[in-house]
Length: 249
Image (cartoon, rainbow, N blue to C red; front, side):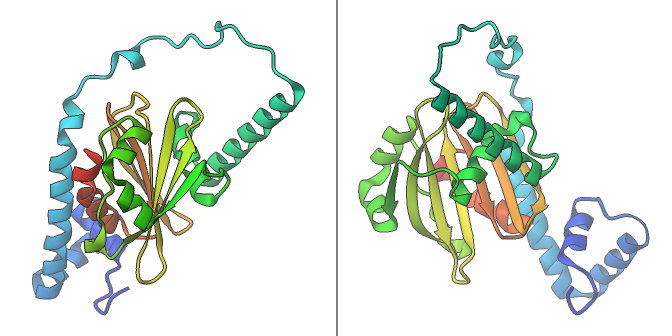
């Protein structure tokens, strides 16, 4: 809470029109009386408006045809598996369910992408290959494009105080490969950006904070990405904006 008694959460809620009743009136009055608070309000509002402008086209895009076709999974022929392989699959499924339970309602069955990104961040999944920041920059954009089958680069997040720490390559459980970019700021806070093939979804979503972590999911027909970090919603919005060019949001 700041010196005038307004929390960051209340200010963001007021900007989004979600603060009701007497507290909304209190914030409005303080905004009129405090120039410093008005500057913060203006900066946060500008961040929000910029992100809305960037992602507004997604709202007008039609649903992909693949999402409208019925899923025919049960009828697909199944290969016989060895007992040890079945046991590994059972353990992997149990781990995913546990992750979803920890994340709460936001992590439903359709959000295997989120559970996968959390498993990679938490170290549950072992990387196929790991590169230092220097090696990543030396490998260049060609390495990223060949790994992800999509022309993407490495976002520069120095403006928000985050520097690239390392890059890890993973099998993404479906096809091809996935990449996790790990960043650190001066306070030791970690930001991970998980990138893998498109799932067919078109969405932009910032989930409610859980366990001190903020999650931003952005998907389109080119790439899926999940950003996870210990930060405010507004900082996550700014990071998503900074990542726009490199990740082709």
